[in-house]
Length: 329
Image 1: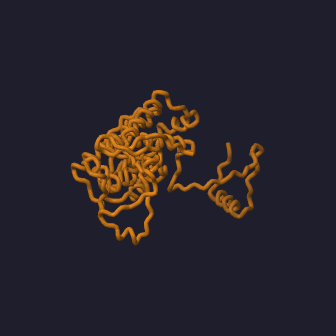
Image 2: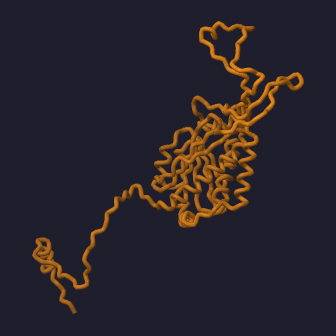
């Protein structure tokens, strides 16, 4: 049995070690210490999603943007384009403090994943959507305000379409049963996780006609954790789009494109006049064009020359007859 040291002997031993008079005996099995590369780590902002997982998330959220660009145009009767801007990792407090007030916040239940997410639509895009649905041209408001009850119901209907697009874009990975839990206008009263919890913030830029606004999707990392490994595996073994999905996507794109309205302009001729003569023009004045209407004229589609035609009449109406196609060089 080893001898038990007295308190005086313990004090003397500690004093000798602190002065460097006693060294620990080297062990025979001790391996030489190898220098390792040091990596900077900020405990206030832990990055817990790998680059491979971020690539997988980017692929899924880009597919979500494409689905939005297909789903919304027939409903809004307007060209819609959704562009993925960024995917960031930050704390929930940082997200809440970055959101302007008032805005449109929808709390989304992410079943079968446990937890909620938040989708924010900026006023710059919410009010054009509401105006468009109510029969307007998609006008924006000079100053943001809270939504009325009727406007909230309209946004709720649009949000269901957005969730349907999200469900379709993730269907190869997980079958979501997404629902809108609540809608709010003040971000400070929306608390889905603790402020220090890490979240994935997905930022989109939405174009609806001439209106441009943002859509932000905030998903707590703890909600996505169960599927992060599957997402990284999906990037390693990327599969092509199934034929039936490709055919369905092509059908939706063609249906939207065929309904698009474009200007068709038959250019009878052009004239160049000094501004002084333009200022003197009056009703009844004649302007000589630089073309002979007995020859073919150009027909422009959306401002781009596409056809050659000859002038004529159809009944009592003036008309042009297409005689040739102008191909791109």
